[in-house]
Length: 168
Image (cartoon, rainbow, N blue to C red; front, side):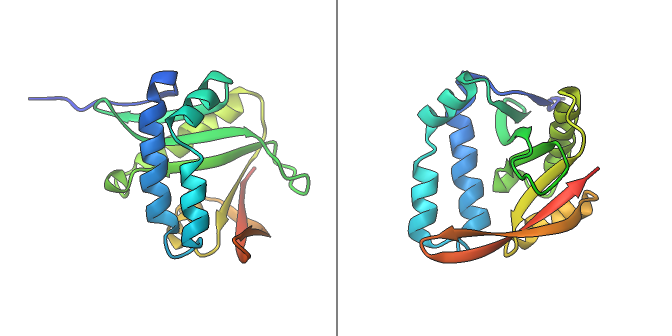
């Protein structure tokens, strides 16, 4: 009998290619039909394995969820960038490869990211999600987030509303 290991850990430079693959697949799955095609392709194209390797080396707070030796998702975390919200921590990105979604890996990664922020002394948490990304809105609401603010992101002259979820 084989045992499948699931580990959430700090990203290492050797994970860069796998994180780039998660980024590509998860962003295509989440944003195709929402973000204009050209803008989405450019955003994904900028974040290849070299970009991720540099991000990891710069000591960015990047966590990965490793499922049986495969990087199935990642989260990036740090200080809240919005001056209008009092929460100190922010999850900038949390993505799971499509074939690993719906089985609890996102929830486990979310909890680990939340704990990482707390371990750095950051109180409260904010996460932004595009309003048209219904699965993200459902995920964060299901995780107990309160929808408290709105903003706008513009992609190739298409304005998309975003929603802030908070946890105190």
